[in-house]
Image (cartoon, rainbow, N blue to C red; front, top):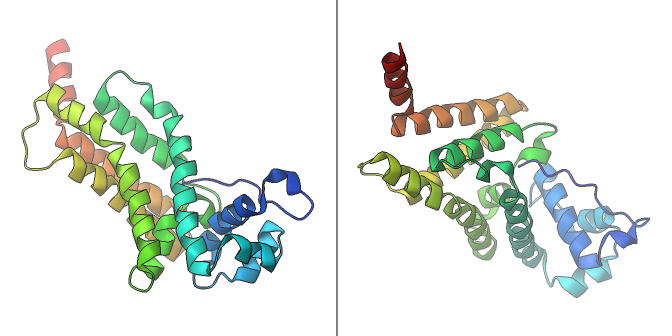
Amino acid sequence: MYINMPRPTKHSPERGDAKTRLLEAARDVIRQKGFAATSVDDLCQSAGVTKGAFFHHFKTKNALGVAAANYWAETTSALFASAPYHQPDDPLDRVLAYLDFRNGIIGGETYQYTCLVGTMTQEVHDSAPAIRDACADSILGHAATLEADIEAAREQRGIDADWTSASLARHTQAVLQGGFILAKATGDPALARESVDHLIRYVRALFDLDAESETTTERES
């Protein structure tokens, strides 16, 4: 997601305590360079803190990774909670508005719109289980916020199928993360947006929305 906050420096200590500044640096630098390629020195330089300050707050780089995943979950949850896609009265409209919102925030430099926890998961899923688990909590926790609207849309439209609201919510995140990988591979955000466009078509088809629109048009003509 597009979170391009200016990073703190030694000249702007008012922008937060050392721990917060390190977490903000991790959010941005790891998305740019990857977890393995990001050194403690990189993080300290970006945050404008000393190495002693780093190890005061985090015993190891992996401990920072876990904290960064949790910080990402906390800050992005606030972003999505206040996003405009919650406004429509119809639950399916809210689901589709969510996907439009996700599409709209794909842009800029690759690191600015891709996902910190997705990036770290790809690198450390086998080597750092604590980071992996924190990343899973973030991704699946966000997916869970979509379940109520999906389930309400199923009930409203009488959808009886072998998929669940939870499985569709998880699928939205799989498509987003896959789109981010394609964008990273090519340097082209249009490929990520293309993936979301297909996801929107898929959701509309699951809920027979286009067929419903065609029937309404036929009745009016």
